[in-house]
Image (cartoon, rainbow, N blue to C red):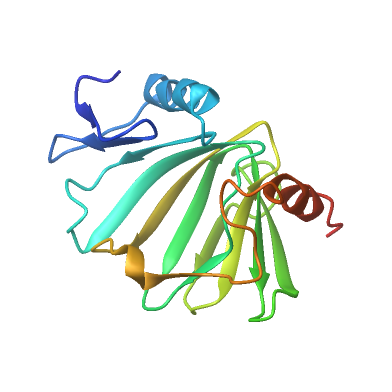
Length: 172
């Protein structure tokens, strides 16, 4: 593990320095951690505390990672793909797919940046074996600011695998 990080839990690291830099070796650590994580993900929070106004994270998701569709009531979020492919799916309030955005790393000829400024239900689906992205959102983190879609399976539910497979099989 990078000596400038502290481990918050199995999947989450925090930087300990006011100036944070990240290199390939750091991303490799996050990828290795995601490959052994039960949740198939790993993140480095480059903000020093969950109470900060701006949250920036380097996130790794392994294929098969399920993020329950949700919306943020008073937050904007943006992603920049560093490595791999990711599908963003935006839903209407009833669970019908409204927009599908295929993202890929810069230089691969596709969309590499995304920003969501409205409280719309959305999820992220890793398309490549691993995807590495930079996320920026408004802090402080408060779980009650996140509204999970009532029509989507809960994380850990037996229906998650089939639901995720269906999202991966959408033809864009």
